[in-house]
Image (tube, rainbow, N blue to C red; front, top):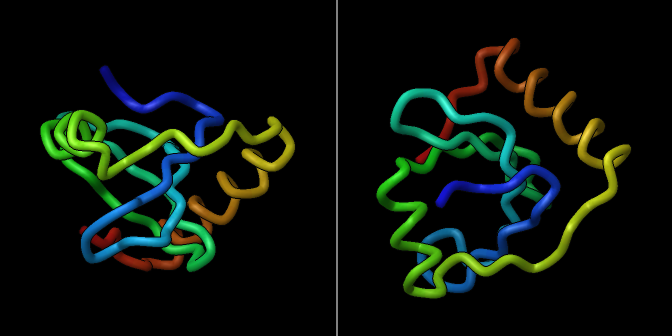
Length: 88
């Protein structure tokens, strides 16, 4: 089970509690998200994403409209282009 496009994942515990993650892409063993409200890119390994879902650390909070997703995807790409490192 992997992240779904347009879904908003709420971080309910841990270092990033309060952040909302929107999936952008998956590459090899990692899932890449943009975190709101901080607008920074985050990377979560596949096994940790699965564990986060199973342990309710990540909860599906909402589904965003396509036009909002496109704005966030543009910000994600801007962050990548301007060498803003993905944060774990």
